[in-house]
Image 1: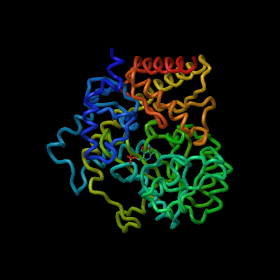
Image 2: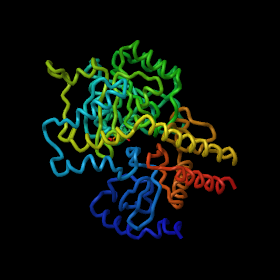
Image 3: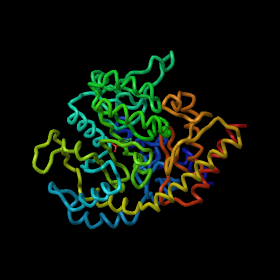
Image 4: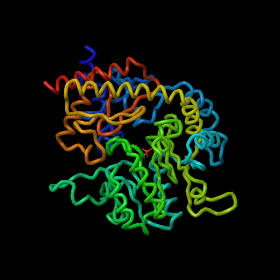
Length: 442
Ligand code: PLP
């Protein structure tokens, strides 16, 4: 009966809301959702690890607002931290102590964040990190990883989601604007690197070294495949960038959730700038640009004017700051270890199912993050993880199967756990996947 409830035909309130929404939104929504065919699932509320939709169905949430909610929904310390602020003022043009407290927490934990500035989203953080690298080096261009997602700034977006043409992947794709809103001239200053490809990295950075300000890299790029950075690649990246005076921006908007000190520290990357977002706002909008003190001086010093102007009406608003601090303070080393142990149990369970059924699937990810691939060989880079039409339809089918089992599973990007989850939630995911494979391999 529960399964039937979760089928599209039973979602009459969601259907009704979508019909209303079509009159005001160009494609009916503002939110991208895991499943929007024939209409999205409208939510009523969240409750720890679970979501409850407007028709009364419950789902285990493996999206967590695109990996933002490391504690799941309705985390009490966050609610307690913000409730008074709702009565006493939610945004001011002057600074508050809340921003200092969150900055102190982040700079104490993340080695590459000697200094920090707050903005309102990961997109803005990446944009200002790129501008900072340009201001610091005096160079216009950037290099970035093929296929990776870094938000919506034109330069960070060019080269995202590239696809093979009729002759396959060669010659290597050049950056193209992700969408029609970006002028083609932007892509000319964007150089694409393949993840874990040392020779390509060295050749491409050397060929344009006098124009490239920075390499923008997510240590475990989720949409490009959520694969591990190989130690030799990380080493070669550092050496080549240093040699040419190119800065490294580690985009940890998503992957900061990998540990107490973040992802760069975990994988031995030593960036000049680091961007953060998502978990550091405790469920409220946020972004942060951090970096070496010398580089962060482009934003100004106590006694010198900035090289780069940077502002934002809602930046460092007390609500995001206080919520972020409450969420992050609860992410003790022990909390990270518990999440990682749950993630390890989940990934090995998924792999055991695949091996038992000799299925053409693989699993990537680390700590609280995972991604299931419809490929036997574990992806090392975007091209391995790329989903063509057939693979996309298979993954959509998998996501629907999970939905009917009461689990909201994103595909083509990272899925994640939260501290609100318990062992029985992991069991639920494992049995849903095993049933899916059983049907697939028959
Ligand atoms: N960078 C990375 C690695 C991301 O995963 C995202 C969002 O998913 C962004 C940047 C953009 O962040 P926001 O959606 O807060 O603008």
